[in-house]
Image 1 (tube, one colour):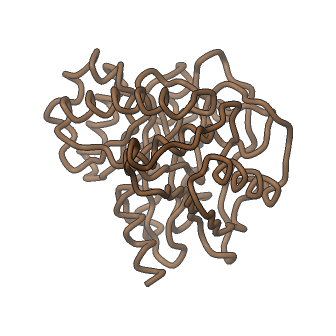
Image 2: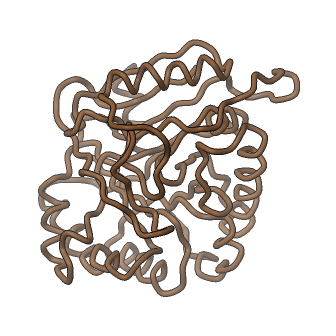
Length: 310
């Protein structure tokens, strides 16, 4: 089963219009359905939300992962969900060979009746950048969720060692590859390699997967199920390039557009313009708290979502 979690039909959310990426910088692209991601383009053209949901259901059904249940969210501004179907299909596998939950939960937002917000960082770690983010979060006593790239975790282990404390870690693949373009076995090998590195360096077992670029294919879904991962996307991302050299203005934009249950996407690796968001992080934290928001990890946000449905 693939279950996509969002918010109820009430309320609104924010999925910024995609931009053309620089090579490898992890930004969203204009072409394709279901895009809020970070990175290179996949196949496809613009498709409305309901069509996307049907296609996602067909991908899951074709992968042999069981019945599909989708909870549509009317809160995305451009009426597109942050999911992309991929070029790689999934092969039906024996449950004996590939035990798993048989379902994958996909979430991009939390409950709308509580002023909770989850701050997430992708692509790290990177010296100086990640250190600056961790220093700021410590100063303001803010928990966050870091979706880590396994190769960078190995290379820059000292950046994370002893610093993750109250923060949560998630899997962002071994080398930031497009998981919509690999089959289930290759996806599993990649995620397992990253999972091992993250656990050894941080002391935490990742339970969350954020696919690079926000791209999903049947193989990635099966691999996530096999590893008992939940797939986490986002509802609002930093728009650094729209606020060049204006961290205060960018922070103000984020504060104004964050809604209850938002999952915010930031990066602690990338081109220089992303430093706008990092430099404006204190103003964003102060502004959101002034609006009554509480910062939580993604898992805490999802736990609050689960209570809503009890």
